[in-house]
Length: 497
Image (tube, rainbow, N blue to C red):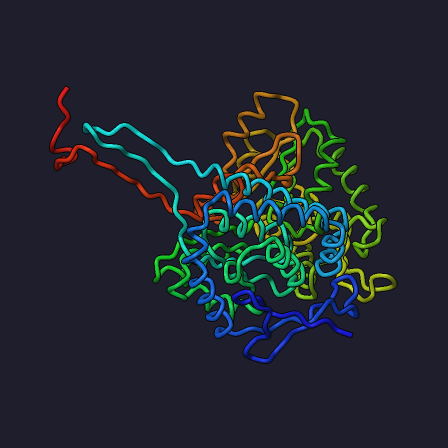
């Protein structure tokens, strides 16, 4: 019996007005149907936006500490159900259980953190330049927020967006990725159970062309927060521009690990395995480039290749599995395409390079962990985001050349350096043009209380996570109270000494 899931609009779970649905299947076993979900339309999106618009009139007036109490309860529910939520996520997304547990934990952490911000939405009080006048600034909610999220972190990323939007007093229309709708529904059901009022959070499943575009062009939507590819992010920005929405974009990455001649190589190998093949390389922060000093290049490469080739690929629900499948046939085909591009460009295939399609892998979208060696920094496999288990290893002669190679891509999300030289570590923190930087750790591992985001084609200047997220989902209002009982003209009338 296939479970049919509905949209949540104005506090009621309802089918799409289209009457159409789509199946979602396990990427480790295409015969396993996760569920049937609504193939929604622009009309469904419009209903959800209208519900959010009406709910905003009340929700914005709920005191922020009271909003936060509901979020605190949601965090507790997430923690209580972590294992079940992680298992559902592995089944629909594919990554191993340790990783989906981490995904849910990130949502727990973010929700607890933002619940604390219900009492900490601090403004400023400043002395006025005139007598008998008080000046301050306060945060105010913006309105209806459209939340458009990807499939690779189907609970963590929605929490980064939805929870700060709610604590600031906004309402939400949430369009999750079509490849991972169940985790989105699980998350929203917990918010509903925690007591979030009807219409404050609405969820509409379906394609970006139908639902997503309708949200982008709606005049009632005042904030769009999108995580996905740079190509789609550009479209989001263009579509939202005519109505002067606030737009937050978190897009692609081509992240680098730089390994210097004094690095702890065993630690570096561990970091490159986790950074390159965690989540099957399907992270915006994945370490898909490794730049290695020529003095330790061969030694590092031999160890890295041996360890990668030994990784066990399979169903993420199997405790012995170390790397799961690609999310879909289309994503697997992209990986296969880039492996062929790497071969044609002249990079040396050091391990992997093949899809896995027999035996236990016959019904899933599996690919071997793949390493290209002796890669030139200008090759497409070293420039373009692959979003799969493919890592390019590039030799360098010096720290300065490593930085030049590391910065020589269109993206600027995350970078790292392995070195025992504290001076060089601090120079790298300064020199790398990225929004995130690690020392003696891979390019993944962000924590919720610090800003997350990147430079160049990775983002548009906003950050999520930490208190920086409040700036996406609130507006500053400056307030002046004149208690002088007379007209005082700022910059014209000056206070007497």
